[in-house]
Length: 134
Image 1 (cartoon, rainbow, N blue to C red):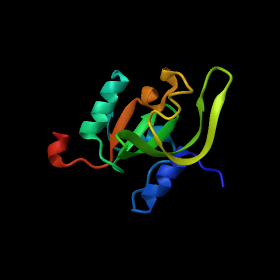
Image 2: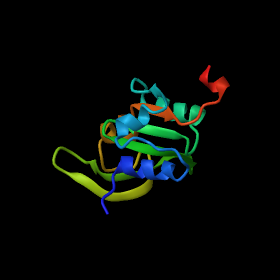
Image 3: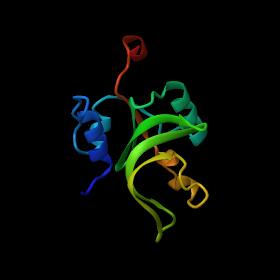
Image 4: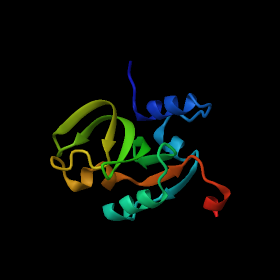
């Protein structure tokens, strides 16, 4: 059975009666979302620590979507289906599975700019209270 990241998030939320579009960009646009593209990695971690809600945030980078799962051992983690990580121009570290990973998976083997955290562009909030929206 072929799966990709957007099908995984779609299937997770459909179990709760929330039907998401099929592609990652449309999924992140389905909710209130914030552009964090200009933040450095430390600021992105701080943003998730302060505002992130486990299983209530979608993390978007072009062509990929993840479900924020909170922190494990002081690391921000996400549930997603991923093909692999770009090691360099000709090599990839293959994963090809649905996984729970740190946003810095592969940090000892890939360049900083190829980390999921570095490539993270937007955070979508599936639920925001009235106060949080203000």
